[in-house]
Length: 378
Image 1 (tube, rainbow, N blue to C red):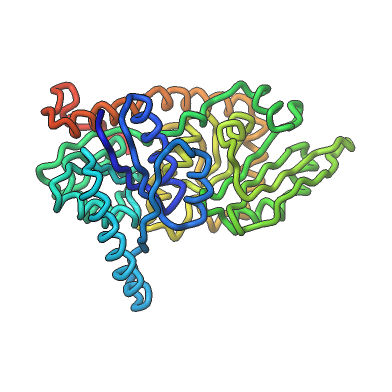
Image 2 (tube, helix red, strand yellow):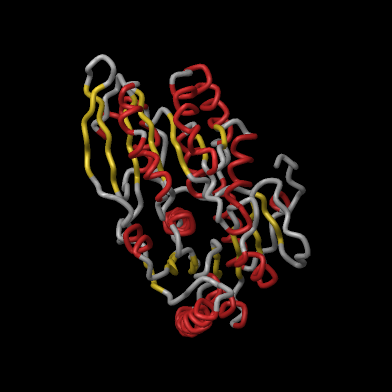
């Protein structure tokens, strides 16, 4: 049995795969401690997993403004000291970080204490944390076809993002029965990522009546603190009741995605991995202010693989017509689902777990797992 620390806080896109990995490690008899942030989204999500150990670590994102930089230095210093004390006391066999600002302190402390470190980057443009910390890692997990120039002494694996057990594809009618959704009407789901999206929430409310007239039910996840929850009823052109739901947060992502005919979403790596797992077609609206425009790169790859289409934020005015063109085109939806089914066949979590077990035990990497060039599909 080995002991692992998983640094994964800050956003749902970092925490959710950390939870998935912790679940898999615990099932194999290991112990795993999640390092999460103090943000509300982390607290809300991790409360669903009382059997998993979690520690809240002081941290803050990097920024050039004097006040942001000062906050970064102070909180990251506190995070480093906390991590140092924790690692000295518990002596884990390996550390894995999923990117984000909670990684820095524990990765640096682990390296100084001689604990092996692995890093996972889910986005198709690696983030600042992974770029800066990769030189301290013994393992680096990157998406297929992605390169990180200039790294030496790091074994690179090309693999996907772990998804929690409970986010799995259900039969459409089963999922709709669990949600209380009309099985005879189309269902559009709008998701702004773990933080929510004010612009997508606004679009959903502004187009609610027009979508209802076409007989399209709407289910919008607004994000914590970004909208009023509730359910409303309208009528379609034939006078039939059409419902719409707005929720701040969903504990049933797998059910929701399985029930959907189509999803409108941001393009964070975690959301895309869940769409693939549930084989749900999507219209992606990449967040235009994401670091290095990485959501656009994520969305473009998803479109190239045939999982859906991409629309830029400036083209939101055309989104309703795009939704109508796709959601009533069953041939196209089935084509998307077939491509997503192909994409969902990779079992990335087994690859990562087995590799981490080797890293923790000090076993030389298995020959069949040594880095080989990934196909240039992006």
